[in-house]
Image (cartoon, rainbow over the protein chains, first blue to last red):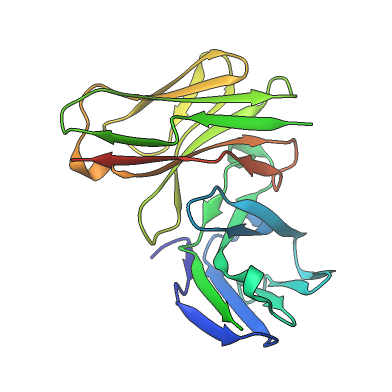
Length: 114
Length: 112
């Protein structure tokens, strides 16, 4: 079993739709939960992060973490064609030898069509 | 501000040839540095990380090696490439907090 599971999609939605992206994980030591966006043939860029459980909102993006279920989500409201990219979840334990080492999901390919 | 560079951007190499990919970071000192590989349609796999000059940790046993000859320089090498080494190689540095990892533009390697 992989430490982080992410549905690779692809996911295709019309402009303006609400998008839900999800990851599950098995390692209870994970404390930091990140979402990266990667455009084609580019390096990933950090979109949002959440520490421990809870919600975090940034504009059209909302990240949720449910540590009891080992499940994280990213919601995109009013999706735009410019949101078309691969979305990668990533996780990290806090401190110790795991510090700064990220474990990534497979990535979900999202296409928002006009 | 901090900037991370990788070169070359694209590389096509025959099986059995050597490899050297370079990554440099500007605007910070003593960063943690990371090499990842991303196969087509896959997530990122951590290959090596370094917390200082000459300090390299390997995450996955394989045909590759890494070196850190200077504080802000990280090099990925191979003596003899395999077909399975093809992929998108990404260098990253850590900004201090566990979530603060920033990636370079990547090198797309095709082994033929």
